Image (tube, rainbow, N blue to C red; front, side):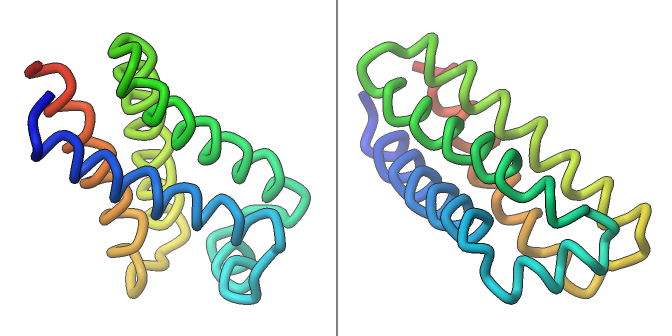
Length: 115
C-alpha cells in the first residue's frame, strides 16, 4: 500500500465524514448552500448518509480494496452530482468546495485502482 494512497484516502475520509456530520446537524452553512442550489432540507440526512457511507467504505477499502474502489467511485459520482447541481443553479462562487471533494475522491479512486 503506497504512502500517497494512505495519505490521500485518510484526508478524504476525514473531510467527507466531517461534511456528512455537518449535513446531519444541519450546520448553518449547509442550510444556506442547500437553499441556494435548490436542495430540500429534508434531503440532507440522506445526503449525509451517502457521504458517511462513502467515507466508511474508503476506510474498509484499506483492508478490502474492492470495497474502497466501490466507495471511491460512489463518492466521485456523488460529488459530480453536486457540481452539476451548482452549475444548474448558477451558484458558482463556492463550487470549489464540491470540486475539492471530487478531486480527493477521484485521487483516492485512481490511487487505489493503480495498486
